[in-house]
Image 1 (cartoon, helix red, strand yellow):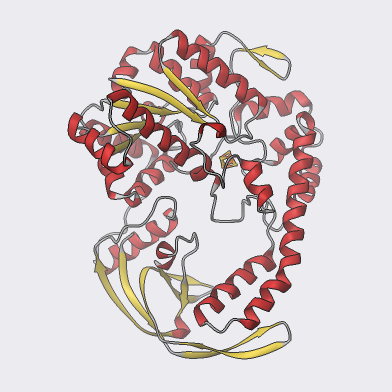
Image 2 (tube, rainbow, N blue to C red):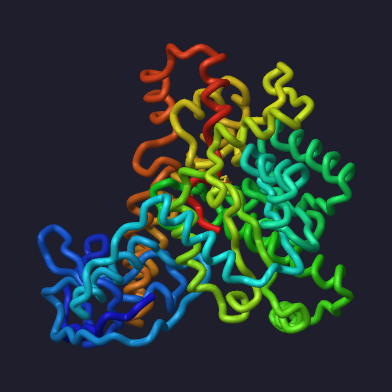
Length: 461
Ligand code: SF4
């Protein structure tokens, strides 16, 4: 993320009230790197890069009143870590940077321009020796699978040499997705394609994230649409798939599995090209794909040098309907809600916080036990957080270290908000609202809706 300047705060004394106790809180002068300047509630604010350093998802924002001085300066990109970036901030930083340099504001790319750029990026590369397809079990994934099998030009363009498919099991996929994955396994076997569904027992998932519900229950936690941090995608998908990809690459080319970075660099030196990862975003998700590409600037250096990410459906202009048409052409059968169909529904976790109100109603009808369990998980999270507030308050009162005190204050604020799956609206209330709005829909209408909605629509890869 480009640094656009530095901001130095004034040394100040705050009166901090915790419970019924008020005490002074000394804040020494400090200097921070700034990535953007914004106006919040009509007041100038400086957005710092401190969240990169601390691996947090929320940047430290400094209000103008406590600023001693601001010095605009453009330093080289300091880098960061995967999954800690916020594309809105990058956009904002670029705008400010352009303003400081007197350049015109960067224009927002049209979907067409994004497609062209993605193609240019891919064509700039030598053909990869190894291509991996990260399979999701839904329609976009099947459209890519069938295109790779039956469309020679597509195969040559996107997976010209060695190729394999991998999917990480979140442990909370829909039964229809597990069924579709089995079908994909059979298709791959028939066409001699290596396909691997990675389940938690195989050692690629971490002990902290063996599957979605185990992690959340162990921590009395839930995933919330209101939180910037969405740890499920990196922990249950990206990292797992990455580990398997490394293992498979070593096995395929006879490398020893000693060090991931070194082995991938060895691969690149041997084949003089980066390995390719195919991502199943579709047409109409151009911005999502472009944001992911931009986020790749924060990957570690060795990863940038050894991996390239390609979005075939975006490049080819294949949208959800086109994907369904491709599947319908080749897929023999699939049972969805007791009926035979040749297209499988999209995939996402059954308790995914991205679900719309209609999808909640669908879940209530088809998997009420799953919805009830989710509601109980949310209740447990609310209770655990509320019960814990007095402990954190006590810790704050006893803490003398200023830095730790500041962290505890932040933590307390977050706990007091006590967000549920849909932010301040609890799951039962959201469900009530869904019933008010869509309660008149028939089951067929809900099934129809579910067929074309729902996957990890916001996360980036
Ligand atoms: S489907 Fe939803 S809950 Fe599951 S990994 Fe993706 S974002 Fe997370």
